[in-house]
Image: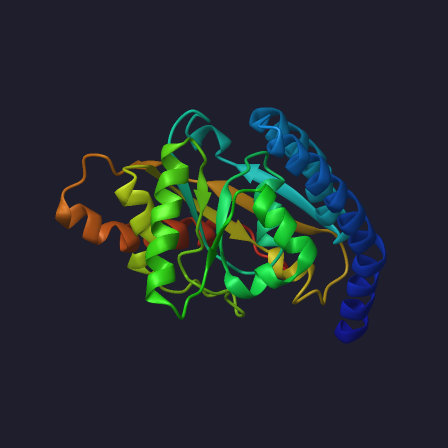
Length: 253
């Protein structure tokens, strides 16, 4: 029965989500990059984000989910320098974040950039390519990220480095925090729950309640060496604690 439910959920997603994602995403890329080409950067961002907001809403709707945002008041002002550090369950984590109205750039693996449509969206959203097998590329990614943060573009980094397939949050890698700490930016712990049940583990009937929770930002500007060393574990523990308190789907007995 669960396999049948999963099949129909994925089928509906393919029929409903992919055509809209491809069509509207392409429009956003063309308009956004044309405006950026003539140096109308703020207008480019406004147009792209406005169009892609519809895409994010449509994706979550098409996958049969209802997104609840908690703690939005904890987000720094748009004029402040900050990085988001969420746990990572699913490829749907990204539209779930964008569904909340903030548009950070992302650090994404080089393989994803090979997909033409995705490549265009990553450029549009000021994302940074990372070849995890190249130390030189990792250093460049950190440098590029620090520059973007200093220019007022927030960044999103998945500190686990990969998606969790069983709902257990993995270790937050210390290297993933270098971009934020070198830019002396605020660190925003982010909790995402139940996104995997909308696609990869879509084996249940009914609307899937997805949660995105922003925890209070941590200012790294005046941290000493010991505090910086403890920061990854501190953020990991905060995310795990909040994750366990959010409702699961299906509900645990």
